[in-house]
Amino acid sequence: MVTVALDAMGGDHAPVEQVAGAAMASLDKHGPHILLVGDVARLQEELKKHPHAPEKFSFEMAREVVPMDAKPKEALDSLPDASITVATRAVRQGKADALVSAGNTGAVILSCSRTWNRLEGVRRCALAAVVPTQRRRGEKHDPFSLMLDVGATLEANAQDLLAFAVMGSAYASRISKNPEPLVALLSNGSEPTKGRAEIVAAHQLMKVHPAMKFIGNVEGVDLPRGTADVIVTDGFTGNVVLKMLEGVSETVMSIAKYAYRSNLFWRVGLMFLGSGIRQLRQLTDWQEYGGAPILGFDGVCIKAHGRSGRRAIANAIRVANKAVRTGLVASMKEGLAKARELDIPQNVPAGEA
Image (cartoon, rainbow, N blue to C red; front, side, top):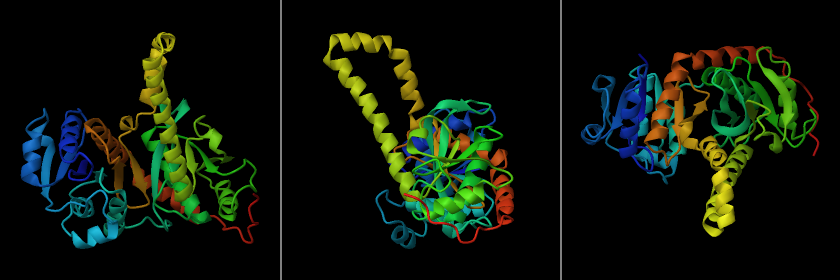
């Protein structure tokens, strides 16, 4: 059985929602064993409040917590017994196979970096995020694309982008059960020469990678259409795009609520559109996806949203379990090994505006 270490003290609603989500996940027939990391006495008291499978739980004491607004390095240096540090250490020591945390994002990434090893061929890790799309692919017809990086590596060179593409492709094929995910570079035009020099060079590398279905460059308008299953970019651009998409989703739902309260005719119209609006709400609900992976290490880490409730935590645990069971890390290693065999292009031309 897979064991997932849950940083039960990390997150805006920890440990209440974390423990409740873990209890939900423990009732899954093929769910993992869950190692709850934090104030053990408090976690045990919380667990008693929920139906759960007692045999699927164990505990690891952590006396400190990294605040959500703390500076990651300062916090980890001053809090050696922080729950996120204890949880990442548990994975390194073999007590767990994967990590789930809704805590301080920077602290989670830095703790993984300090405790785990980077995969060979990975210079910088990538934080991925799911993006709702029109198209549904894979065995389960998941309605999302994976975008990376969205904040871990602000400046990425061509080799970084290639590594992101390899790791993102492996993740999409394992979690979405899509054997041939379509991979694309985010740029300001579809032509191979469009974008910064790093994008142009990465394009040349990706198109010759033997185990990747690279479809070229895509523009921002292609993201919600689902043109690609994996969208590759640097962390600065990815973070801006992700926040914009989140804002659009929230704005659409806010406008619908305003229209419903303001005008009888609008209210009647929205009633007829009720089914479609419910589908839109479900499609854009990040709690459905649980969390997103931090890729580039020899361990599995699923980073849940800081505001995660119990449903999101339970789904994040399920994703972590699936990533381990399907051999995500081994698949990334294989793809990265093939990437190292590629010829690095020399004298790459500068990108076009």
